[in-house]
Length: 365
Image (cartoon, rainbow, N blue to C red; front, side, top):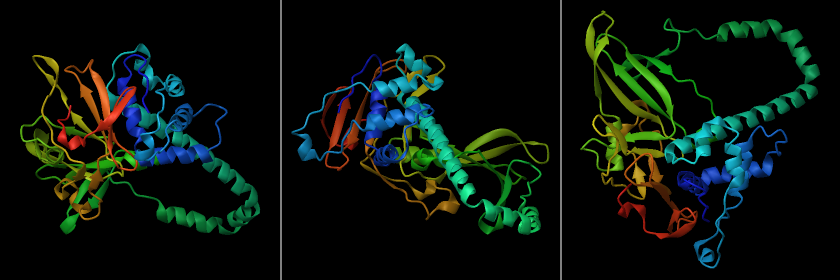
């Protein structure tokens, strides 16, 4: 079903259509619409708007679709919900925006609203549980208070001297100092979120490891040796030399930084970075043809050594968002999506849609 473009909103239409055809996302909000009570205080406006938006799309077999036509529409409730969040302020001015950035705004806002919904549900459950178990809790506090205090002492974590990380023992007993970026979880991060492991190796020091989330995975496609998505992923893990790092002996040395994928999400979003900054011409767009297929198997060399053999590394392509045009500040967005029954690909350009060939036969924009 097409969506009407009310002024430079093709970037939003392309992303929203992709989310419609993302089965875990679609199913999540269909279930939420059936189970979560309506929020009378309007504290989760985007979540409720997405539930309403997705109800406009029905899963219809391809043979039925040929005899069934839906009128294009404007997802007004969705746009109204976005006006309530400052993240979407730039959309109000009607300027062309970056589709990948818009996807991030949508997922981050839904993540926060879902967290709020979950916390409220847990609070109600605790309150109800507290009423039924009140007498038992009083008895437990009276009889087991000393035991509980002893347990707290035993289980209290001990922080390393660095204060914000821990020592990790890897293969062959090798230790490294590991930091992790604080993250919180929701159904959104469980669908789209993964983690990267960044390893800094400095002569004379323990390896320094940083674990940080990604959503989506950013891929540099500018190097000459990168001509496919698989090569862009392998390029992600190429060691990088960093000069002038202060070692444990207070001397400047060359360190090596290497990035691996620590965890992969059920739905992997890849952002192919076509725009880059040039000292002469400013922001430029690469017209490189990048190959990709309808399926992707991520090489084990890209995965953290300790995780190899554990992760599911095969993916099936179901959506490709294209940017048409030479400049980051303008152009047009369209999208190819795979039908839910996987029978055929559909090309969607705002209000119009047509049967498309498999995206692997095309040059990426």
